[in-house]
Image (cartoon, rainbow, N blue to C red):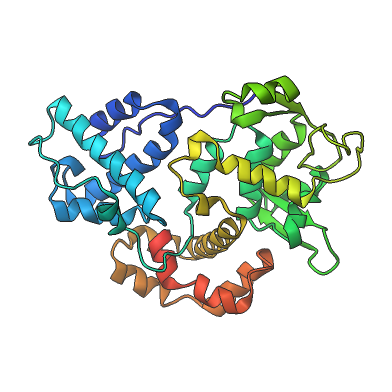
Length: 357
């Protein structure tokens, strides 16, 4: 099946757009997902300061590095490296005021930007960056299904999901999208989903071959045994098994939990994701991040005008003080049934919403 490729281009609305466009064009294809994320965040920071990052003070540059929210020393060091390379690039272009780099490249310095007791939530932009870099729709759909509320014991709600359980219908004159979850008697429910997830489920269900190593170069030994693609078994479920192993002829079984877990683990090892913290790609992180985003989405729908006008933390505090958090958590729990009430009190908080969304 034909694969859709993301076209990574600079956004003309970015602060200091011309330099960012040239820098984006200078990096390799495998680096562009992270660079797009970095430049977008950088533009927001630069607008608040009023000048490009490479001409800012050490204090302001460090504020930006803190805002990247690295979860580990390694991730912080990689982000730091990209920022320094961007500054050197600006110096070579002649747009940087001086050739002096006001921050250092070392693991000890990178430690400074890793928060103690870091929370492993991801934003929707980070989720999109992960999905955009997956070539297989069978991979793309995994991350968005979990983020939008499916999980279950051993990811059963993903493994038993059928194409006819994902549908659209007219509600109050508008087309809306839903999933009927029927993986167990206890947790059967219907949840609203995004249009994006609806079509990802369709594309994943139609996929017949799976590209090994995300379409990148495959180890020659593996090619000799399996080639560069694996045929998928049409089992009647959206997530499919490969036609290999002792159960290859079984057309009725779902993908096993081990098979799905192994697939997710391999995705984390793709070279495109070397600069994305692996903790962001774990099912628990994705699931809780989606619950937090759902809470913010509900507030956004109910207080959209206020959010558009609220720029400072004080303004947002005033807005969120009007929110009925008990009602909000109940709405989230109807979709994310495994997010326990006690956990949601800490998860769906004013502080987390302001920090991540």
